[in-house]
Length: 121
Image (cartoon, rainbow, N blue to C red; front, side, top):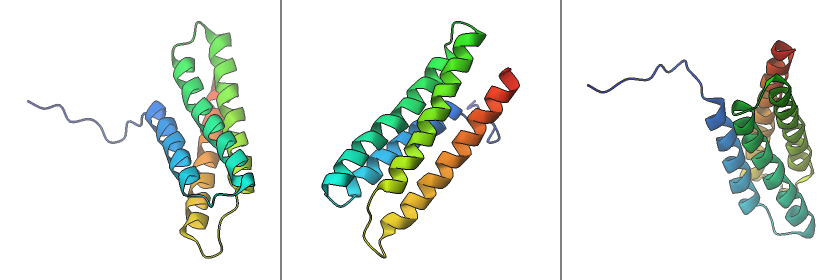
């Protein structure tokens, strides 16, 4: 018999990884300018960092280590917002909508990390 997963259970490790993947895919589609090259590199790093630090938080050595990793997740997610904001997209481009969706997801992740920190204190 196949086990059906509860659709209400949400895997934050998967969500952070998908955010990093979507940021990578967004960067690939950006117009090739010097600014986008630099901002894109930073976006890929910061979005990947929030995902990897969340995995590390779940494997933390204690409460202090857990809180440090979650703070890093929040910081890197905020940084991703900056690189998304600074990226240059073409007028009337689908990239504008994609950027807005990524900014919305980053805001939600930031709020989740803040809530986790507030409960961990």
